[in-house]
Image (cartoon, rainbow, N blue to C red; front, side):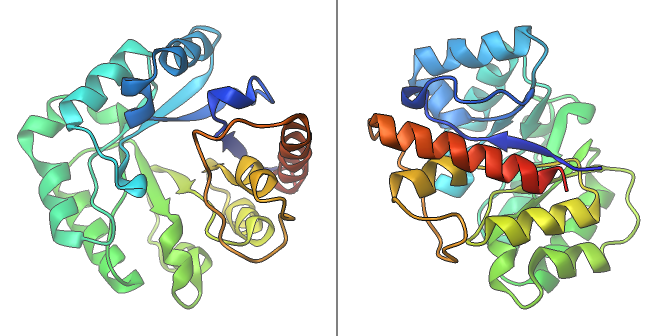
Length: 237
């Protein structure tokens, strides 16, 4: 049994592939009406939409605005306001009553943070005691540390929460395989488009960032679709 992939595809690439499982960037939903309406249509069609908060892109709008646009697009889950690498700030943001009041517990997706895997576990332990949530997010930057997310999953205590991997760091095949082996719910990634934009193979072993605003040519669209199909094959074991 495989996992669900949420392919992050800028609107300029069109409707490359629908999985029914989507990650929508909160900051882009707020600034791009077309993207906002596209996401709403996916929700209305039965899609499971997670709205992210922009922390990974260092473009984080006020969380009240993120929660409001998430409600508009009928999101199934909302990523609570984390701060990249910062355990204490993430704890403060996620546990703040003003933020918790914006999202029902079952719709909260938390992403513990830390500079090390040990700090990430400390953040998780605190948050599990302090706040109710439905889904646990594991960020891609943990792949920088020895063992990466495979180590995290091996050491993770039994949890009733669903688990989602956030992003691919630099090795889509291996990181998807880790997610499949750990039987997590899903993984999101802009890798299919990002590697097509860079004219690089998915197995290049180099971190590639998605260029949201670039206008694709026909070849980029074709390569992005091929990458999506390759990643779907990996995700389905």
